[in-house]
Amino acid sequence: MIYRNKELGLATLIVLLLFFAAFMVGLFYLMKGLYYIMLFVAPILAISILFIDYRSYTAFGNWLKRKYKKDLLSGVTWTLVCVAGFPFVLFILLYRALFLKGIESTSGRKTPQTKRPHNEYLEYHDYEIIEEDQE
Image (cartoon, rainbow, N blue to C red):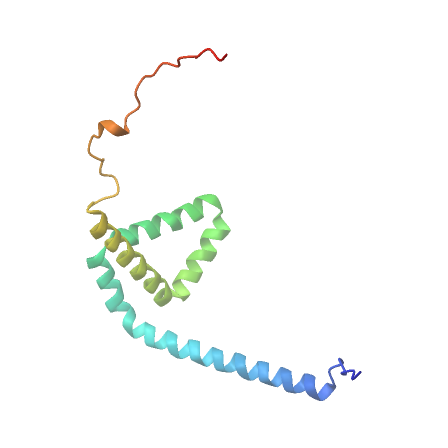
């Protein structure tokens, strides 16, 4: 039977670390380029979100306010993350606005708070339990 050497040599470890470092540097430059492209698109996104569904902004503000009420440090942290990554946040808000607009168009409702029409089949009716004799 042939046994394989399961120990990593020093040279193999160095090569793996160099590949990992090259991958991380490449990923950094890719994300940096994507961030700069999104910086130029961000003003257009911000205005288009207002026209599509402004409630995405208000919901995001309410979410951030709840973070501050729950824990001040968490609220400050999320605020800093959102300021640093605001192009990414705008893409998330655009997705939310488009998603909510799609739900409204398929359901036919303008706002989620509208009441359903009265339907007598959905109401509870009084009933009486009749016990039967079992023989």
